[in-house]
Image 1 (cartoon, rainbow, N blue to C red):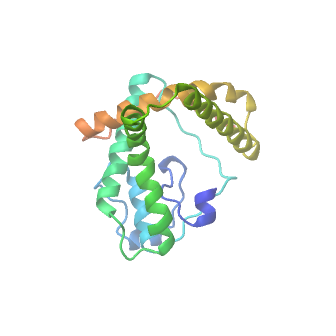
Image 2 (image 1 turned 120 degrees about the vertical axis):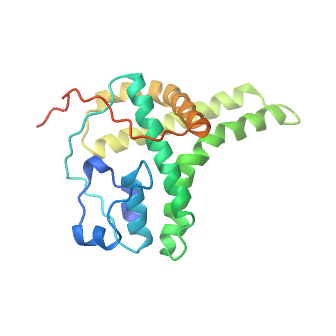
Length: 207
């Protein structure tokens, strides 16, 4: 919603996208340069001055990975593909100002900066001259989690989603980042070269 209001949607998810055929073809159609063709096309259209719109009333049904291995492969492909998009589009010279000042920096932070942040924090803690007391860090972490939960409740209410799902939030916020950090460094060491489709189990329920 925020990206929509600012006009800087950098990824229209492939499983929930509707494109104007003439506009896509005018930019050369889908590219096979990356493993994240949805982000690639979205950024290409943004840099060309096109408008991407989020519709919160649209419904899309898709299957998600159901095993850790499938999730690992999916996230490796997503991250590798998005990093390729960043290399491909660079600073997107000539794009609208909002894209260069908001859209692309957000994309860089989401797929690079957020993974390097733990290293910066760890270095700050380990190299601080006077040391860092544990109590303030625990307090700040608790405040951050509380604010995050408040934000999640607001998002769930806005989307009219089932609030009972929020019991997953603390574990997801504390465990899943470590999983994604592992994905990031595995991509840095050896980037995937193939799509690595997930196993289809016909689990998507319609209606």
